[in-house]
Image (tube, rainbow, N blue to C red; front, side, top):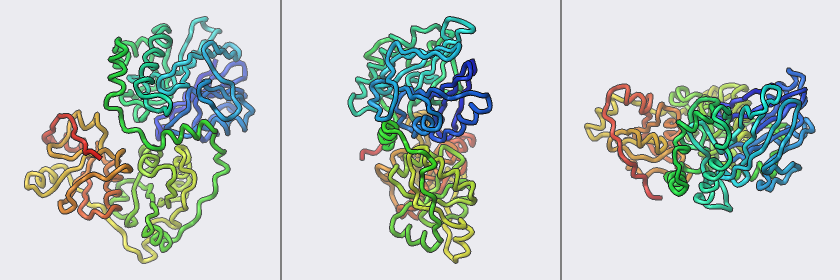
Length: 465
């Protein structure tokens, strides 16, 4: 048996290749499928099977394109009601490839159609070797139960408890666990950064598996769920239909500096994908920064939404190409175009550049004491609860598309996240909305803590919107 994990850091997404006797199966493929075709070709394998553990909500899957390019069969849970040609998977399903046996367990909970795939390498042992758990069981967490229009979060959480204790945890402790996501994904809230685990380790360390009472499990799983991005249900529907080939996407249109200036005045998003440090020093006024260096695709989906047609701003053709691909991975397929020549061309056109001011943690502390600055924390709830700056307003970046934070526009505002990535995005959104006194905290909350400055721990009082 040959087994390989592919981890896409931008989406914290894991997909898999399983092979035996020249035949291969791909599980939960990312949208750009050349990576699997190349891996199979290098090992003389033919991709015959494509498994989806569920309808993914946080990215657009490449199952349809991969099937069209290989002739492979797609397998997905029966309750997915998939609109593309497929084999509906239920309990008892088995597929043999040489010495490998793939057996399916229906594990509804994260979604109604979720399945886990039990892998047995019969050449080595008749006992299961690993289980690919999709978004049912993560390392340190389980899947969020609020991604269905047909079932309530409480109903899905109850199903998830039954799936875990009635099926998945019946497997032995030494069975390896390979999930579809790792730390950073919004499909759960407490994932570890490890790439695999064992069922025995998860029984001992996974907080959700420690909850033995079904009602308590439901209560904990449905309390303080992280904000569900608007695009999640849209991506799930795209995956139910099957996404078009990336090769069919239209080319990006060149946009001159003067044209971009006019478009921004009309309210069009200008998306600057350069590094945070470059953006704060000089950027197109009214542009929004989501840097390619972080979880760019997820934040673009959260902040812009799938219907956005942004104009991209970057330093090179390579950056434009990378941004285009990453946006397509979450379903933003039709950017309006790109700034030809980038910031250099904007300068050469004689147009003014904007700057985002920055402040150190120590400087901020002095201004807070003098009553000269307010603070906005844009981290997620668990981060806030673990410690925050006293008197800060909490409004996570995830909420910005729904509503802007309520702040006093007359008082300078210092914005921070953990390390600086999200706060620069937040600053750019606030500046785009017309705020003049926005300052980014260099190094974020990490820098505040490293400076030994006071931290308050308390439940958040999020604004009611």
